[in-house]
Image 1 (cartoon, one colour):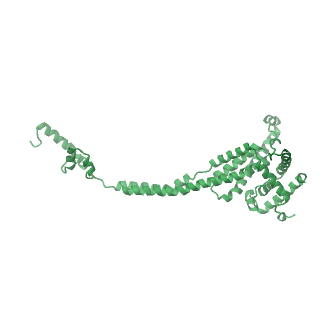
Image 2 (cartoon, rainbow over the protein chains, first blue to last red):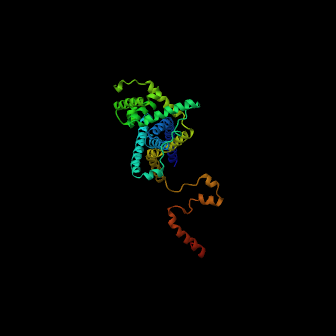
Image 3 (cartoon, rainbow over the protein chains, first blue to last red):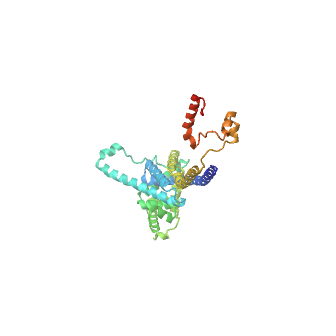
Length: 207
Length: 132
């Protein structure tokens, strides 16, 4: 019986000794993921908001992307999270745009339903950016920001994505290519065209 | 113009980046709060490692259980002699009974003879003594 007791106590010690680092790793992993998500969530939201021009939809797709990353890819190395996260986010944005497109086509055949649903365009005042205490500067920044958002929203999806990931999120060409699922050459081309198009549209706001 | 020859960070690009970053800095508090809630909801979706841990230690647990079962089977059966502690806590007549080597071993394999002994005691009670 003494042998059994010794064996059991040794097993318990072994289990608890092995569990401790695993538990620590799990907690550390959760903290790392939380830090990552906290670091990207606002920029991700702005990217989604620019693409969708709708705050609630932008929040939904960001939350979906965070959930997808957390539930399916949390075990991947943290340096892969950023491209993965933005890839998921862009997929969600595209899905929502497709659904909207289908809905709009259906609504075109039933104009009375569209009126009933009251799918209003976004309120520019509600979407204005709170940019600081100086009202004049705030107004100017809001106007320029609105123009930039409008110009970005009008870009083809791939160009907008390349521009925001490279210029706003600060991903390098390789990471942007991973996030967009294309070659690095394509990223450079999309980015170059995006800058050219934005320059052409926003020239007056940058003089 | 070749895209590869594009200057890495023109004034235009710097300006757009500054504007976009500024817009993130001044997001309304309610919106920041909803993003935080979304983050916590996402983190709650993170799969726990406990099932992995259980899978990893299942063979060890099975081995311990098998060892325990083996020990129980291998333990020697039979009656151990009374220990000093048992004797000390027993009344005097019980001590006599416990130490009596000729006493009837009621809890051993000879339990099968119990009916005989019972019959013998009954006979002795009715006829006076067993030998008469």
